[in-house]
Length: 333
Image (cartoon, rainbow, N blue to C red):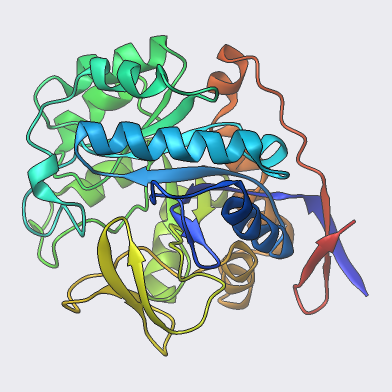
């Protein structure tokens, strides 16, 4: 029995899926279609494949291979309007950098890197995640806005003043809010509270039960409001794939039996194995939002976060329609 019909889901942050690593310079159209077809089974009709921190030459190579795969694939032209670059202009300090390689974060924010990357692409970089406390980051965010990019905060120790300045420069999202942080933070003068308190920032969250507990997620959503919260997966190639070892962005990771994805050394998390339909189910089953609100967080609100960038680049999205049954399972309507 159909419980609800809504727009197809849209994932702003997905690093890989179904055994396919979007950061692999050997990716091709056939591999990409495997990932995108599996994402469609989870109700996803659009996404921003995400490339993480690497050196400039490696970033150019990864994006060039990904863009060719999208262009030549069956589903890419319909599902992928552009890309998300998470890094390299993040905070390299322990606890903040996560699994991003710190040696690739030496250079301060510079639009020349974005221009160099895009000079090889047919589709644009639509979203860039940065740490606004980095030297030059505020001017960088302003310049990206003028180029039709959306900017987000993550892997950052930005204080209240930094966050206000970033929002004033057009930064509009917090990427995986509550994560990319050390276990211990200053009691009150910390970046999590600063981002929660900034009304111009919409929070992207990972509802997998590993990046944060259901209670912590409920608190974040309560403080931001469902209308200012977006569900993302931060999935890597271990999503929609069996437990075991994988190679993600040049590093060894493992999907555990519990469904977490960890680096080989077992410290921190290395993305997730979350699927978007599971994120919607979790939010509903944990009592955080009802089904229409949870779908909006994973669909219309995600697309809405890109609205200015899509207009700038002349991109129109067809979300399609997805029916959800009483078991909260999605199928095309």
